Amino acid sequence: MYSFSDQPLRRILVRKMRLSAFFMIAILFFSCSEKENSGVLAEVDGKAITVEEFLNRAELTPRPHYCRKGSEKDKNIVLNTLIVEKLLALDGREESVLAGQKLFRAFIKGRKEQYMREELFNRLAARETDIDSLELKEAFHRAGYIYEVKFIIQNSAQAGALLEKLQKNPLQKRRILAETYHDFKPANHTVYFEDPEYPALHHAIFDSVWQKGDIIGPVRMRETKYMTLEITRVLYEPAMSQNEKVIRKKRVRERILERKTNQRWNAYTAKLMKGVSVSFNPKITMEVAALWSKNFKTSTLEKENDQKERNYGRFVREIEKIKDQPMFTVSGKVWHVGDFTEALSSHPLVFRKADMAPSEFIGQFKLAVIDLIQDSYITRDAYARGIDRLSSVQRNTAMWEDAYLALENRSRVLSMLSPGSGNADFHKTMDVYIERLIDKYKDRIKINRELLAGIKLTGTDFISSQQFVPYSQIVPHFPVLTKEEKLLYGRKM
Image (cartoon, rainbow, N blue to C red; front, side, top):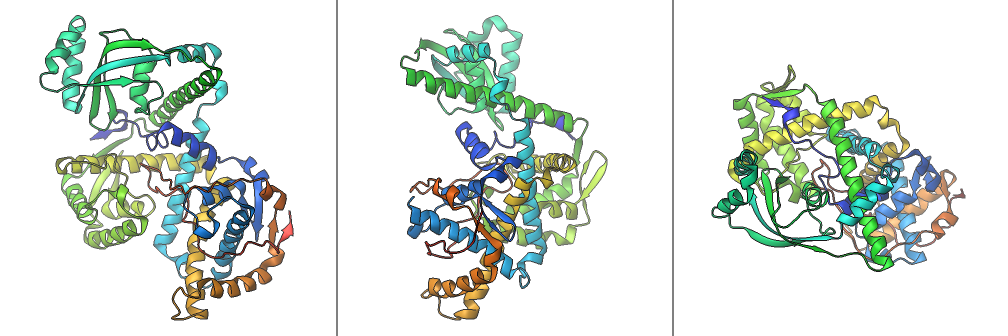
């Protein structure tokens, strides 16, 4: 039986990306606040395209070559494209086959619920006002230390045995570690505050001031991996210039906010999951895990989204014959295999390790199931708090739905207007249809041209993704719909 109090608590954002990426996503994309309405760039039939969505669609996935730079022309093409995408989704909804498909509805539901969990995380995130001046001053001082270390990496059992020895003989730590070096060849490293270490490891090192000979750890870096360090030399490098001081203070603030946010999130999930336990049916769990392994032989993190969907469909078909078998029990409630696969349609399994050995698979499979269960409790709490009704959650969810419906309608339009022509006349064919769309819906389109003028785009391709979440792609692929650079339609906002 698994008790959630015994499991390492799963973090939504901090586990899935490094600190810099966390702040990019938290600030740039998941700014799920009602005040976003003040940044509406355009409206199509009442659906808003915000500055945030405009920037994310343009910057977090590669744009076509004809609008890849950051000129005024490129900005106009980007906005035209996003407006046309909304129009295609709107105009094609009545004829859409995709809109009513069960798996598609489950996908959209899953996207919405991922936004809801992330909004809940953001509500618990620490803010600048949570850092007092003394705390910042002390952390700033510690950030100047540079540690030369000797370290070893162990698995859970090895680290547990070492920790027990260290705790039983606190005055013999260096001797015990020296004996351990015989079995685990140590490596040497120089650690700086700005290094992108695992958060737990960073805080273990820089939340204190260490002396030569001190021993840190074992520190859990990730599932089954622990590090133990011996300080071999201590240096100090003060920030000399004003620019160095500003940069260091910024990094220190980010690390403090990260630690405080982790603490709040872990306290929240511990309270939410208190008393919840999971008991697996070994035979059925092994059978389901074997089918999963068969259909997902490579890391699920490396699969393209469409490939994952095809594999999932095959997995569901193969598992249909055992859908009524009890797979596990959550605090007395039985989950049958069918219940599990239904949950998967909105929440694909997320493995904590991508590079697992075959012998680790069943354990990691169970942990992925446990994470799915915990997310279901978090999602239920988010619904209870009304987070699904936030305009930001609804807008981001609609972004994904409209993107897929627009692609479906684009294919239908091309087959209808230019059957068998391939891609040769793509833009020519689409422009004819787009003109009709704009004329049909021109009274339902509003554009804030002044707001558009103040936006800056980069000319750098950027591919971004999230790790350790059900849906890793941050925004839909930039749609290839139009090269039109003129905004000669729409009412003024």
